[in-house]
Amino acid sequence: MSQKIVVGYDGSSDSDKALAFAVAQAKAAGGSLVVAHVLEWSPYSFLTKQEVEERTKRRREELIRAEEAVLTPLVKKLADQGLEVKTALKYGNIAEVLIDIAKEESAAMVVIGRTGHSGLSSRLFGSVAGTLAQAAPVPVVIVP
Image (cartoon, rainbow, N blue to C red; front, side, top):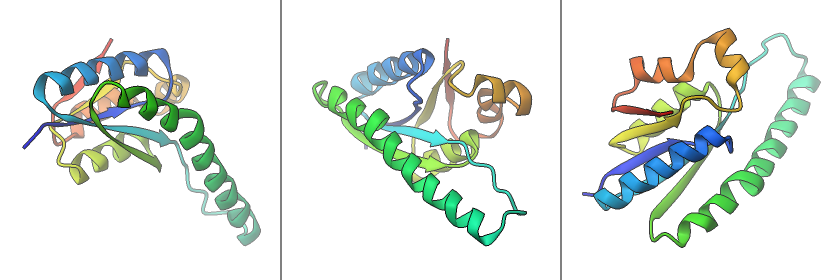
């Protein structure tokens, strides 16, 4: 059974470094990648029905834009490297979603960059890297 690596990717330079590391590890192990892009989502329980419908519509639009702008070009680029690549595009808490993906995919490790596009929110609400290091069911590699 080949090694499967989940890599958190948001298009930042640090996530590019994490991706390069994950690609090298997958190639060395004859493994595959799951490139995960997580859009942060915070539920608001006090929204009206109309606001929830509008927010749900925007959420679908954001997922489509993320697929077209981030994941599709990346998969095309990685296809030339002979790796098996899957993508995961989800909403939620970044660390929790990456943990869920690692479990669903029976991943051998999770790879992330030290910081990403959500740097400010991580300083305010807690570090994705710190949460993953404490709660992930598999080893977590934080690429500087």
